Image 1 (tube, rainbow, N blue to C red):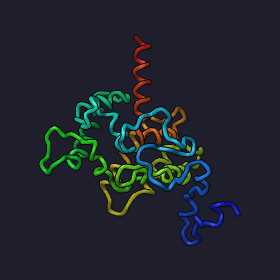
Image 2: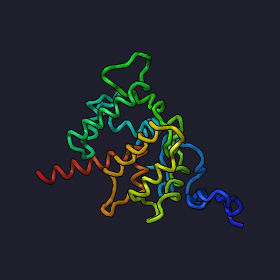
Image 3: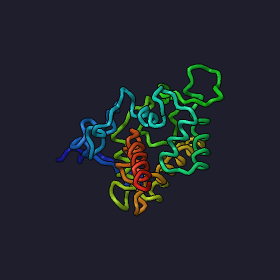
Amino acid sequence: MEDGECIATEAPKAPVTKERKIGTDLEKYIAKPYVARALQAPDVGNPDGTKGYPDNGMTVLQQHVAFFDQNNDGVVYPWETFKGIRDLGFDPFSSFVITFVINAAFSYRTLPGWVPNPLLPIYIERIHRDKHGSDSATYDTEGRFMPVNLENMFTKYALTKPDNLSLKELWQMTEGNRAAFDYLGWMASKLEWLLLYYVAKDKQGFLSKEAVRGCFDGSLFKNISKMYKDSDRKSK
């Protein structure tokens, strides 16, 4: 009997376990996929994480946020968020709205004290405090990366095209992750995933697993920003 075949992943009296299948052979590709990674974001196709992408001693969640830290001082102010959002291809008005929502929502819990800061800075050192409910659990509560949960996301919901989520499937994924009465978590999750879909979907309207993985460690943001900058240079 092959490894994993003796482990039941479906329960006859719980149809949802048949609808949302999970992989059972991940260890063929990733060493201990159930162990949270502090520094890298591996998946089946990238067992060592993003090649050539420095972690700078940060957790994967911190790496995700560090793209917006324009001066690398460990603090993300609204004007830095705004520039980062603009670098991802958003127009000025949308960037302003998104910036306000992000810094207003995430600043306070990362502050070093109890007194609010009207400048709404986000301290990357404590960004793990901003983890909300109703998410994919691909980040753990300390900001480490859980490979198994990234893989399960796609085996459960990427039913049209393997390792790619359509907009409908993306919506179904956010619905499936909802925790009871977690209204803020529901809204935050849908907003985050819809924004990612907007910036990273392909020409066929799919969001690839590689794009999602790159979002988690921030490498996707750097690639998209570089693409827009290269495009601007060619147009001049």
